[in-house]
Picture (spheres, rainbow, N blue to C red):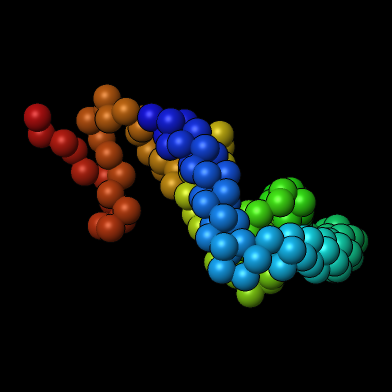
Length: 160
């Protein structure tokens, strides 16, 4: 079901790009519109290049100290996506690329990705050990009679 929405969005972005380019070209003229698209692409690529260097340096610092560079890896992926959007000619894709490339707007996007995609994936793969949702007694499917109640701090017996 979600895959349909992704395909629909991937089809709507070029359509919105073409429509916006026609509207802007009608308002300011075709040469100015082409110059605007080329200029936003060049400025965006310079931004992504600078942010990429900063992210790589930060990643190396985290690795040297022995920390897990989760934030930096997500930033790197978002910067790759930003570069792809900025290389695609169009004003809508350039806007999306700038949103992914600027650190101020990339941080909330990264937080949403962590919450909606990364944490549920890690939770499924680790059985709850990473996020702390592990079972301390009994079986997760509820087949046992004695259950450890975390709130009371003791075992309780389920009467069925």
